[in-house]
Image (cartoon, rainbow, N blue to C red; front, side, top):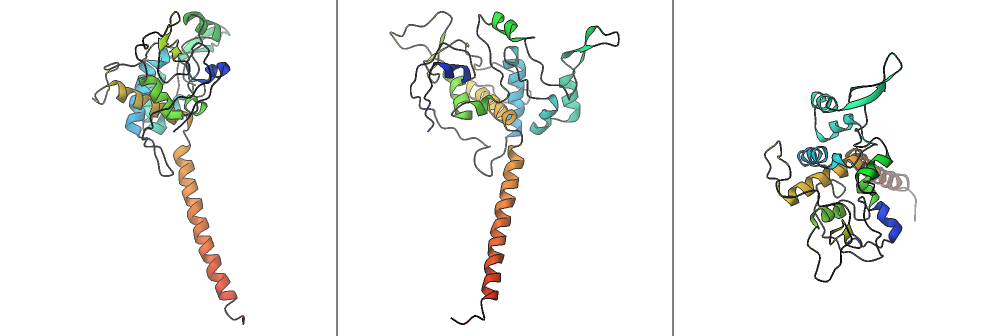
Length: 252
């Protein structure tokens, strides 16, 4: 079970803007993820639904500056689908006349950010800066479990708890007061594949997508690791056999 010991400065690393957090311990409910363990893989259907949530909900505030549209091939989208998704955004560029203009997005482009710069983002969010989500799953202690817990941890504050202006109560956020309102709820999106969009399903799917974009090489890394382990096991066996053969005629 992960334990969070965060001081005020760690609030900047929580993945969501909030009031300064005090050092404390928070127990996260342990989840079972398809990508856990040495043989784990990403549930591509879940990751695709998670991308839909990011696109329809999260991308209104949160950027993914380190992710390219072409990276969506890793969750099972075809080249045609990726091209169509990229073409839905307009990307700033310089025209042949040297003047600023825009063009349709391409698979080689980074995900378009919702704001042109940090000041614009803060101005739109009452001073809070929605953090980039490219590697948010790696950036937090608890990883996927923390993200899932946070997204499902919104509730009414206990009796006697005084909330700051514009703050929301979340039982898994350090300090329990978070500036971001609950982004997900039952029926928040209409899944393309017909999956029932409960709060837990939405949180699980978007967490899977965030885990993928933070670790796109995970599956290949695990496959490489397994091959290396098997090779070393066979090499050890061969070495033992050779050693026995070489020393078999030596008198003891």
